[in-house]
Length: 155
Image (cartoon, rainbow, N blue to C red; front, side, top):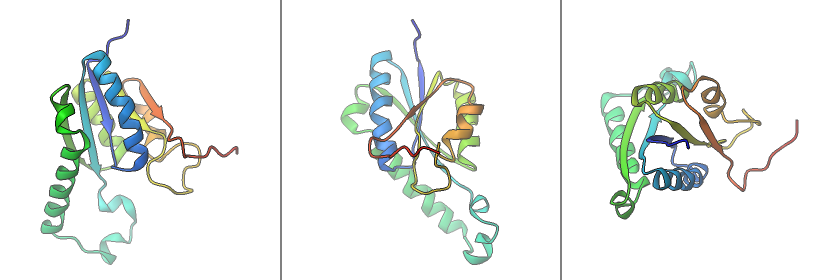
């Protein structure tokens, strides 16, 4: 029988991520694993080549953003559930799929649970911009969870 000891759950705090979290929690409970919840703050340079000139950032801005995200990470798993399972929260900065792969290797994750799509938009109609490269490059199995309200569109 396959036993998962370390389950990695990347989140962008979207409804799709909340839905996938149910699966991650269930597997964590069933396997008595540690759940690693991670959020990646995407570097502004990845968003657009014009972003830096249009929106100058300061150290205070970055610090405030990190504090806000740390607060959100602490709320992903309820205090009651944290008494039942082992949870570790991680904050990374960079390109999301790159940082998730790096963390999966670093933590020796046995499984990654991620929604197929997070942020809505037509850019990736088959798989999300993070989940697609993650499936190809992850050092462990990846469980993709489709949100029930996401409509599959035939190419």
